[in-house]
Amino acid sequence: MKKIVLTMIMVFAAVSVNAQNKALAKFFDKYAADPSFTHINISGKMFEMIGSLEMDNAEEQQMISESLGKIQSVQVLVKEKNVNGPEMYDEAFSLIKSQNFDELMSVREEENDVKIMIQEKDNKINDLIVLVGGENEFVLLNIRGNGIDLNMLYKLSSKMGMKGFEQFEMLEKSRKGN
Amino acid sequence: MSSKVKRFLLVLAGLSLLGIASFGQSRVVEDYRQNNPAEMKLFFYKSTLRMYAKLQKQLQEEFMDEDFPEVPQLSEMIKGIEKVKFFNYPPDSLNTRLIDLQKLSADVLEEGYEEMATARVEGNQLTIFMLGESDQPNGFLIFTKMENGFTIIDIEGSPNFNQLFNFSTYLNKSSSSLSLSGILN
Image 1 (tube, each protein chain N blue to C red):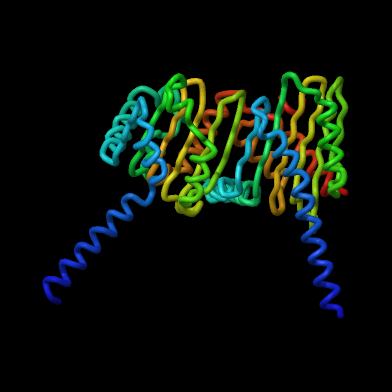
Image 2 (image 1 turned 90 degrees about the vertical axis):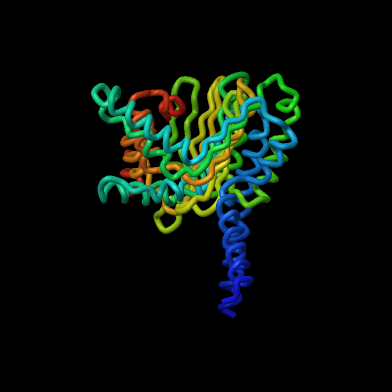
């Protein structure tokens, strides 16, 4: 009996995770086909390849394998002209809200709403969403993986000279502090 | 061993080598090119690539190292590449207008390539496919559709990704264009 109940729970969990993925995937599919949107999709294979790079020292090697090597996909959808940002933000957020994401950060600055949300399992981030909606701007960034380390992403981005990931270090510290 | 068997084995070995040699490049792309002649065709073989790598290394050592000591050797990046085919169809050509990128991509996937990344930015499109495993790639295919038309780059072998990473790090450090702050701020 225990086995049957356990199997049912596992099947239910698998179905619900699949449904979650489908909802967000549908949103991406809906707008990715529209040429007026910028759409970028990077597969896990690409990150696997980057994750196997040989770095100069052990710390950098760990940084690469523990951040990029664990990413399964990155998808970005952006529109900066002729877009009703708040409407698209609401549409995306209503989908994400129903998918058990935890809000990590929420900012309203001038006319822009920014939300950073995550899905965790065993204290590891498996799904990260950055959602931005403004007067004439919409951004949806989704990083999927198995234990995404925000701090490592920050360190890697700063090594590569990429700016703008500074918030990730602060978020990781506050997340682990909780 | 009889001479007939020896000859058979030699022919078989030769055929296997031919098979290996053509393993890293796409049959689909070759068929596509035969049916849709490109305006510009460039073929780089191992010898041409070596020559280019040598020249590049000399030039870098002679002119760049003093001013740009951090620049990684470009020659090191292309060491593992066996062959490169480059085809370009200008934007106003009939072949460019008739290109069905989705169909071509689907055929390439069926051939065994995997989609690594796709990007569409301001109407420009880029798709990267890989053949083989991520730790030992046999080849890459890159499709771009931009203002200068449709371009196919078919690579047999693999570039040195450590050197490519160093080069992209160098480029990013020298430029502030790659930034997430534009998104978050």
